[in-house]
Image 1 (cartoon, helix red, strand yellow):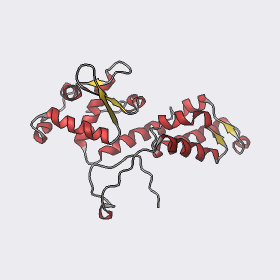
Image 2 (cartoon, helix red, strand yellow; image 1 turned 135 degrees about the horizontal axis):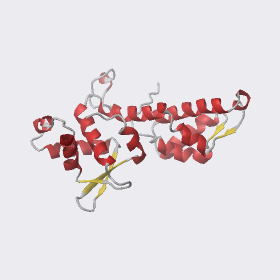
Image 3 (cartoon, one colour; image 1 turned 90 degrees about the horizontal axis):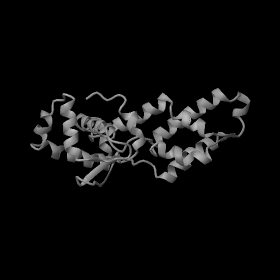
Image 4 (cartoon, one colour; image 1 turned 135 degrees about the vertical axis):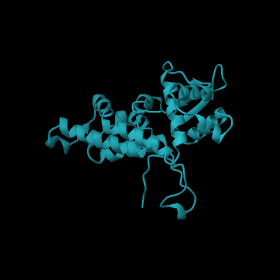
Length: 219
């Protein structure tokens, strides 16, 4: 049996597989694997995405669940635009087909689902990640988030969020936020780099997800 999952692990070990041993960590596909996965699946249906496969794989975050949703949405679009007779023939997908498919609400929802699944049973981590996204939303394009713990804490307080729970976990709220940032990196949601002024700085691993993930945030 093959299990395709859109996330590496949930927060807790409890669940139907609890008696099967340690938590199974499912990383995103490697870039070449993701390219072959989506390109091969569509090629078997006569749909050629060779020119766009690398772009599609990265836009999907190399995640099987999002790649599958993209393939479904693309096929639905092609059925609408092409006659039934042509669907049985070789079809070369255009850049416009790819661009417009990525606007499909089903794909955007799949992206949000894949990310939110990282925080099952970990509401605190989810709130901190949402505050991180809102702080990143205020940055100029291409800039990393510096002084992240303080800016996340400020964002929580600015939005009227009760932050007493942070102090109950760790007397220093910024240290607790740093612990979650390390977890986000392990889950391949963030990447860390050297900042210009504050030491560590953070970016989303897939920055193009930011406008999608910030559409439905309610701290």
